[in-house]
Length: 258
Image (tube, rainbow, N blue to C red; front, side, top):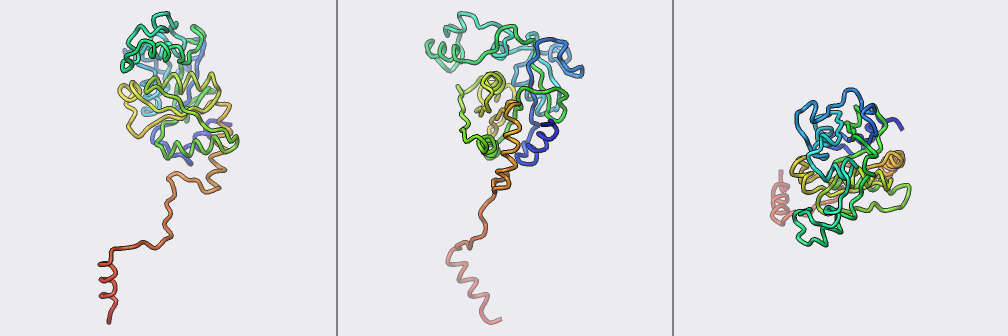
C-alpha cells in the first residue's frame, strides 16, 4: 500500500496530534536519503533515539542516526551499534536506575531485544507523509482512545490480541527493534527517557505497525469505522436526562398561563 494512502487513513480515522513516523534500519551510509539531517554533523549534538523520533513527528524532519549520533548507550545497543558486553548483561551497571537488585537488572538486560551487532549502520526516520523510502515500521504516538481504535483495527482481521510489554522505559527497544524482529504490532507505554528527553506528554503512548501488518490495520480501520467504531469516540446522546426537582418546578411555573 502506498505510504500516502496509509498516512491519509491514519489521519482520517485516528487523527494523531503529531506526524506518524516511518522508520527503517539501513546497513550502509549510502542508503541514507540525501536530505536527511544527522545530529552530530548537522546539529552539532548527540541525541537519544527517542529524541530523533520526536524531531520527525513534531518538526517533520527527516533524520538519520548512527553510532556517532548516539547520546544514549541503550538506544545504540538495541540498534546494534554497540555490543552487549558482560557487565551490561549481568546487571553490574545501575540500569534501570530505579531497579536496585542486580539480579533484576540482569534479567531486564538479558531479555531486551537487540539487533545483531554491526548489522546496521543507521536508523532513518521521517514523518510518514515525507518518507521517500520503504519503512520497516510505522510509529504512531496517540492517546488511549486513539490507541483503542488502532488495537481494534489490528485485531479486526486476525482475532489476535495486541500484547504490550514494558519496564517503564526503553521504548526504542520495543517500538523499533521488537516490532521488526517479532513482525508484530506493538503497544508501548512510554517512560523514562522518552518522556524526559523526547518530551512525550502524559497522555501519549506508542503504537508501532510493521510494514507487513499495515495493509491489515488500514483495512481494519475502514471496516471497524463502518461498523460504528469512531475517533473521536461517539457519545450516546439520544436519551432524556433527569434534572433536579427544582428544574421541574421552574418548568411548570414558566409553562403556566401565558
